[in-house]
Image 1 (cartoon, rainbow, N blue to C red):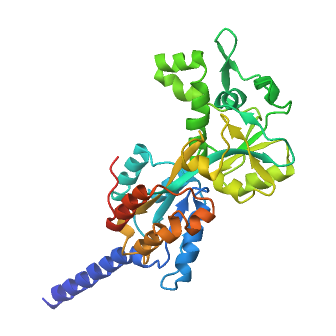
Image 2: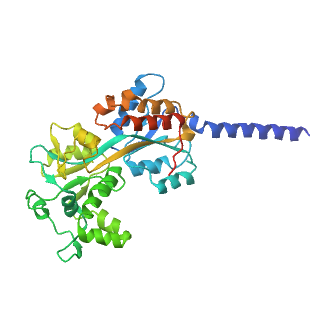
Image 3: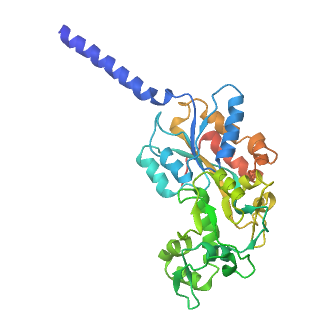
Length: 349
């Protein structure tokens, strides 16, 4: 009988310890972990610095992993080892939401933080280009139509071969890899836009939607487009050493390097703060942060960090993020996402 009582006590103690391990899994960490987009990284970092300066919580740890890489880390599970917030330079995909759900991340909060433009920048030491979406596609597409409309491997070696009005300079564009949200935005807005401006390809895609991605989104792999990693700052640095190249990255990086870089006009529109804000620049996109609701209240400061991010002093028209290059949302849209963040509203796809 005494043996049975001892076993009951041991079992009870074991159950308590197990419960402490499970419940303490997230509580063991006292610092917010943020992963994701390199474009959102500078904004997220600036908010983290302001948040940490207040002294109540530790400044979050921000990692620049690229949008796609960030979602993989964010969706991997719930607990101390997994990220709390994911930055994104595109909206989360349905397949990524499903991946999250499979791993127990069932309540995701979506907060749009503002807008950004994808620029094709070059050194100020050369004359700026005036290009169309068609020019961009014809320069960088893996395959283009010949005179008969048949798809062939892209033969263009210089910008002048693409368009006689462009310079006789070798096509060399430094850009992000497929895991980047900037790359997603570029292929969907610039490449697809240029593809559909060509009658033969527009008709092809209309007849067979399966041709859209391989034809319109396919980027050449013969050296004309160079994958330069997830770090946009690295592309900025490389343009300083290679004046003939163009670089693809978010507007905020151009804004911070105006002294030695310039944006090239697309469809006659310059990539400026005002043109992106009013929607006239053709390669612009929204940016987001995604919050794991199950970590709120368990990792200290998540709700407060999000509140700082969505405060007028941060993302408002005269906020400190606008000074860094963020294009603020209209006031009504900001109010909507402030409320979503406040109540931690679940994302519905």
